[in-house]
Amino acid sequence: MKTTRGGSRTEFAFMRNPDIQYAFQVGDTVEVYCDHEKNNERVRGWIRGIVVQVDNKMVAVQFRSNVFLTDGWMVPDRILWYPVNSEHIRPVSTRKSGKG
Image 1 (cartoon, rainbow, N blue to C red):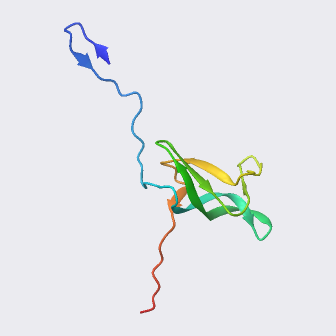
Image 2: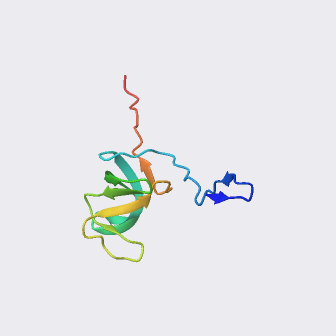
């Protein structure tokens, strides 16, 4: 806060709040857009994972198959971190079957 000559205080916002589209929780199944292995080949696309940690800025997602950083390195623990407002992470879409 900053005090002015008249003694009143003015608040400063140093960062704006991120526009959070989804509220992820540990245990959620999500889809993430990243480099990963599919049929023993490296591909870039959407892959399912499980949210294993969430804080006020980042979401950690763990996968069952190998995932890669954009510079080519394989991630040994298969966990990637994303900002909570990333366009590369989304909840798994629930598809309703046409049967009924």
